[in-house]
Length: 99
Image (cartoon, rainbow, N blue to C red):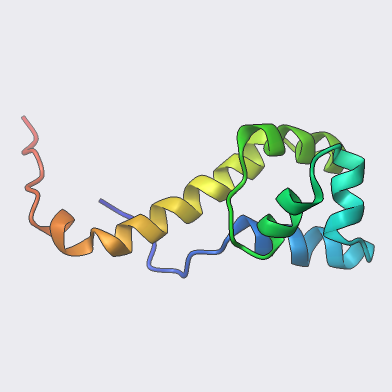
């Protein structure tokens, strides 16, 4: 299994630093544009919750990206965090031999 040892970067950090800060936009202002509760965006940029499919679709529309971009950021973050938690247990699982 090959999961990068690079630190897990929460998609909220990406949203905050690469999108909101350069636009001088608050999570509240973005939430209004996306038509979602402000608390959802505030919690994402505070790295307290992840990005759902619903949010990914809305972010993709607004920023002219793809929903897969946002969901891949979330999946990568989740995998890296879980790999650290399961590191010892995963090391004990044998790999299937090639035929």
